[in-house]
Image (cartoon, rainbow, N blue to C red; front, side, top):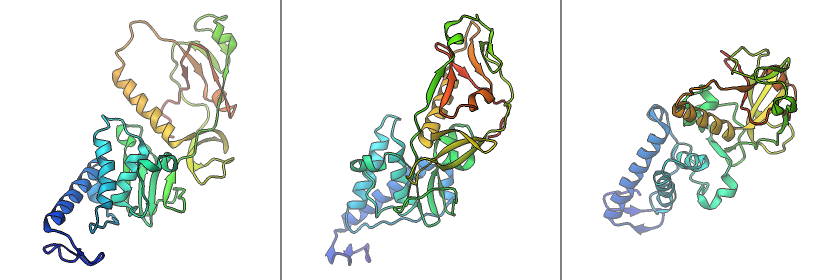
Length: 288
């Protein structure tokens, strides 16, 4: 709109009432403020590229609709919807209609890039295992590790099927509590120790997938020992932090299926476990 006072719209050659102009301007400001709260304090420190037109209500209807869905979700909302909301304000994604009707197309959406402007999970940038890493980060410079599709979207690869290989001796309890089943695995009190080998966590595409989507690959001595989607990693971290807060403590000592890192890393798609026991792979003081 070239003249907000008169409400003239040169794009469509029509006149918009001043009250409508004021309404759309205020609504857009509210939407941007809410998106800023979704991202956090870093939002005000970052430059933004927003492809917005208030000549017609389409942008507001789409983005405000996503904001309304987030606010009314009761605390649970799919990651792709939050990303789809933020990119409309930060990374000039207005030319792509990211809305609930496109859930099949964007259900694995974890970020976006438009030139040097991008939206990414904080975990992939800062690598901190805390609640803040569960959020999103707006960047205004090139982040070279992102695998970007032609439309600008950054999507996560799916976690490949992993077989659980049960340790029958440990599962049946034939060796008794606290007895070593093997040199690398036993049932007993949780044992917190150092990793035997250094694990390097890389952001990369899955070696057997043709899709340009990214995930987290663990490597030991250059060999892949496991691949997981970004959304699954975020989900596990969220549940772990929640469980840590809600744990009431235990009057009796717990037991776990302690697996040394070398044994867990050995089979790529078959991971050791014991029926009825929680598997513990201790990597004390490991920096990832």
